Picture 1: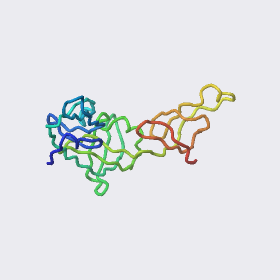
Picture 2: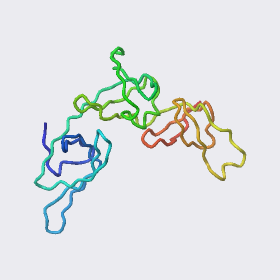
Picture 3: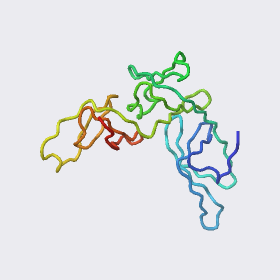
Picture 4: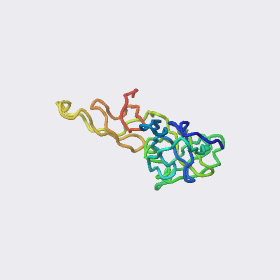
Length: 190
């Protein structure tokens, strides 16, 4: 386990604070008037998801968290539980609750491969692909002259998720979605 100096605590690092793993979302080293430098950080608790602000002083050191990552394959979900397996060995199956997987789970298609983040034996999160391509299963019809008012409509995707999309998107279209924001990116085909 390596120790990080106060100025080495930067974005995308994982640290252990009060026994829990945190991801550093932002950091800014500055000096207030004649005082010693301080690193003002914004930290996200990897277990609870709570974001807090913490200032590290020049004399402080913090332990770097060892976060393991492994590839897993999404199989299906049933009654709020998501089932996964090892891509190499489908007999090694396990399930997680919808809360543990997170809101991006609505864009998961069966047999999608994603990265699971582990702190010891505990699942603390996932790395989803930045964007996914999904087929539109339901879309309200376009109304002539409607483009002047809204410029968008709510469509349903093959995973059951609903998003806002431009008026020209129809049933059967394949569209690309940003998994982080849940926003429409582009139409990629039929």
